Image 1 (tube, rainbow, N blue to C red):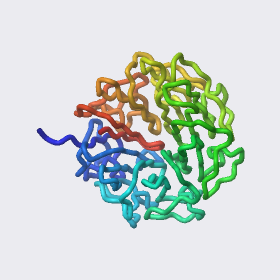
Image 2 (cartoon, rainbow, N blue to C red):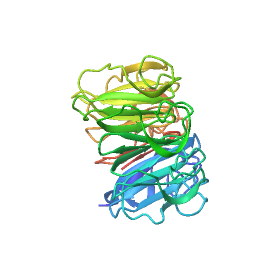
Image 3 (spheres, helix red, strand yellow):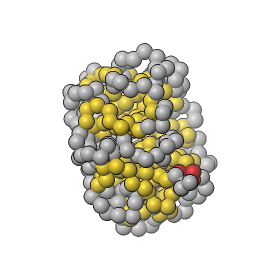
Image 4 (cartoon, rainbow, N blue to C red):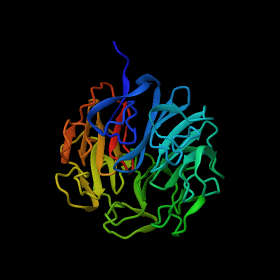
Length: 368
């Protein structure tokens, strides 16, 4: 039997599907070159526009492979040349977590410190400078980190004490420190404790305060013009506010697209979504923006969720992938380029999927 491979679909104009081509887009899954599913521990997708993006894969040997756009060094190979097949991030052999932003990348190391590479115009690399780096550089002043997340031009880290730290672009309050001043070193997000999960959208963030699946509250901050903070307003928030609870049961997963947000809720693993809905990315059958969470009908058994620029992808308990929202580049993988405001089945040719990813500002998806 052939080995399972990492799959990708959607826009490929910068080689972000990693299949060795520059084919415009794929409406069904293609294979990322050279990576077997068994050796891939985590996947991440980044991107800052419809036609660009990059992918990261953390392997069992704790190295990281990267592919796609590289104009700012976000592939970490010491160059600024894009490539359409995976290549190794240099000087990185002890990674435990990865995240991909608009045009930058993050990794947690086994000593619980963080490194970053790529674009740094707003300090999103966190190394005290605003100079891009095509190789990993150490994020200053962070230790005991258990997870990272990356927005379009900002970065988040969750520490083992349940605090969240942020750095980079802050014009819309996405650093949550009560100001709008961008910063090139990490600072704590105001008033957040006991956090178990973090997610970053283009210019907003989500955090689950409290244990996942056991009484946690969704907090949100940053840009809110489309209602993506879910607090029934469209006012930017410079420190975390509580998302309106519209669900019964507990929250087990959170995810953010560019300008929309998603939570896996309840013991039946149902879904709620809020924010921008231009292309039907909330999955509620409409294109109405929602300033508070609404249920995604007809979905149960959701295990994982990821948000792209204007699309959403979920993994169900039966190992099938469903997607909805924008589909102009085939990012829903249902063989068409027609947007859908309702979940459609993605044609991944994969069994036993246990990882999915979509880029915060791009139009493609990964599954493994």
